[in-house]
Length: 552
Image (cartoon, rainbow, N blue to C red; front, top):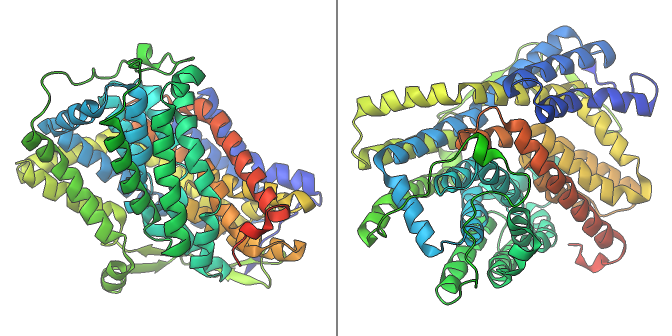
């Protein structure tokens, strides 16, 4: 048994700096473009191993096993989702179904700003609710690039849009994970998040258009922005507080899409914005021109339905795959639980991170049938037959997809290896304790802890599992509501989604803008940290001023 050490250098400042070395190395290498992204991830992984072993006293064997477990998790389920989403997308492109869908969406409005509201925000929120784990960014970025948006615009704006819905993604998986580690009622946690994120569901559509078209361009379409935000925020609050936290995104997204489409039948902006590039500092259209927007006659109703059926199949399958009853039926049969020998229950978390010493389980749960990626693969195969693919042609297309995303899969595996190693070595807890030392400012910095967790792990669920217990313990010590701060971990975490390397790799893969992950990170970082700080301010106000907003 090895007990984690949270202050190995006997200095809070120095130990915190040491714990931050891997993630800082990763972000700097990606942002500067010094090396390719998969190489940056492998270098950062090596740095994490060295810091864990040489400074935090973790035995070499434990460190390597933890990295190995993380790499497995990177491939399954995360990489598995990315691979099969891109496979599905490529099938629809090859048959022309995707081009018809682009023309149909473009037919709702030719204005780029309104296309962003409909696709990146509302449509993306639906996919976040149905499957999460990178699916919405992959799908919306691919649609936007196909409509003619520049690579940076398609990638960066899809990431910005995929924020407010994230806490309820994959049928409320982040809330379920948070409840599992805190012991708090998931309905109360979901309701508390529903008293935080709706404010940002109002802000993000405006922020999205401002980031794309500037202040003047945003003001010109404020009625559509208002309809989009209100029609999402109100159902998000009502469903989370009065129904359950599992169907929040799906319900809110359907209402938002319906309201926006109906509104655009009676309202149009005075000026149609046709530029496909970001208003400022967007050279991506010149460095890698995207495919031209689909042209030609408007598709018939039959053609539109034909192009939609593959995605309807995806939604139907993923809705089933995300339900608790489906997992309860298939997981006991189609699961291989592999305890990692020499790591499972060998690492022990100790106070103050946990109330009492607790061993850290290390079991790779290969729930191969209930993986979201498996559902996506099955949906892609069904859709392939619907689009008249032969089995041999689909196998060939799958092999081509593997080649296309190979470097992305290596990157994702390395990212998850870093996140898993930081959890087992205690580096994450050292960073968390630094935030927890903020005293009266803890509501603000505790929210940023959730942001950091998602930036590190690429998942709001993982961040909640990582820091949920710490949030509960620290808030109780400081006399704050554990429901408030546990929910703040999830709400703050959603803003870290746009800068985590996994999401950036998904976006660059979906837009075929390989090797430009640093450009995407540099673009979205300001938006990420600013929005996270705004969430922190809101939580501060709820903690000390508007205490009646806290769920009891």
